[in-house]
Length: 201
Image (tube, rainbow, N blue to C red; front, side, top):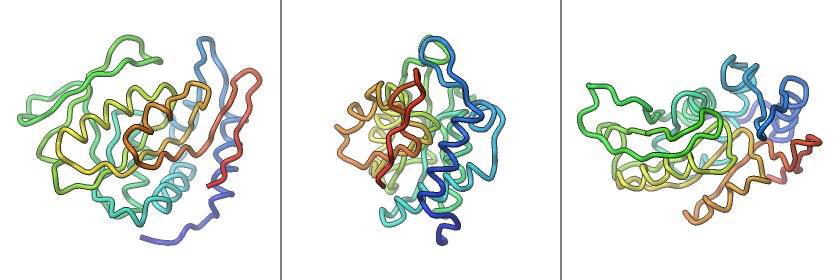
């Protein structure tokens, strides 16, 4: 809808600085960023990230932004708002009100076990052009499951975006088979020591 208030470089830098100063590395390769991204939310950071995602995909004719509950909702909502479109999030527990739906499953590294993702056919279909937005791109399994769900509805998948990409887990290679752009804003090449890949976008 509008121009970027901050430059792409400024947004990359502010998010990278948040990871450095407010994040921490836990055992089992988990990066804890729940102080600003997936428990407590920093609205200004998410607004900037959403604007960057929207700017990147503005020419793609996006009609829906898709994510999974719950940690993907904040950045996806901000991207949808900036694009002037609707947000749809896959539900992990299907409510009784969801009558016409499709499901996919994916392993969860942070929660352990398998999560089920459910989407109502009332809100996603063949007329839609979809980008998938999530907080993390790591193994790529959850985002891939969302992509399979989107394709099942008949929607046209046009891109992926994540706030943080752990490049060493190679999730990007899993998504490249869909033949659409993959945007990782903060790209991390190592957790020990914490190292970043310069983003050339």
